[in-house]
Image (cartoon, rainbow, N blue to C red; front, side):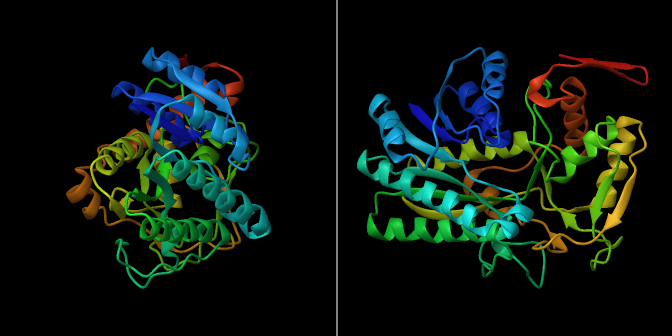
Length: 350
């Protein structure tokens, strides 16, 4: 069975490709490499010893996407491709709406044309927006607070309408929280372009000396230490969640949303303190203004995924920090260069 993975060269996509290949699936990746590197897929091959087929295609190019479906017997799609930075989406909303929504429309139209109706969609906890209580469960009213989150919410609604129009569709909407960590081999991990938008790669780049200090975005939230609280989930747990969802959509129809999270939250300052313990390095930070569109507390109620997908997170915060740090030490410049670095009495290398 060939599985199409859009955005498969990205952080979560590449880890999911590893799990798919190890589970015996044949994998076809389309990615425009806007926020990813082809080297990630070379390392997926190195980890698994298996081939992954790659096409440098933008989902906005519908004709090019159709040619992939013509060439391969695609049975299901895992859809990661999309722009994903909350802050940038506030500054460039039209770019986000056009890219994320139009790309998804093109994908669904091509899938319909070729009779492919099994889809796992990479949604986000940002669809919940501001809520009066935590943890977030799937039945809460949805109210995204930024353009990135609204693109996810709009796509969810589009996919629900798609099922109403054709009951052959089987769609899992995976609302995951804050992916962190890396493959324990140290070969693949999060490799952001420029200054990281997400907390953990920012922390690791400060810890390794690539950046001077962390900008903590606000310390006046209604939390124990005033900084934002998030449900950080290891990327390997997340990748396994996609396999479980793929199995589910293979024998059901309909549209179901599932939270993928650990069910507990950690503040920004807690994350910094844990990384200091793991790395043995001091990690300087400064408090700056809040980021537009951010909320105070977000963590999951993962009960539905446990009951319906037979999925629960397995890895704890130390695993997340150690694997993130190993990736950073082995790859100080991301996929551009493999490093050999000493930290205390430890040597990290590929």
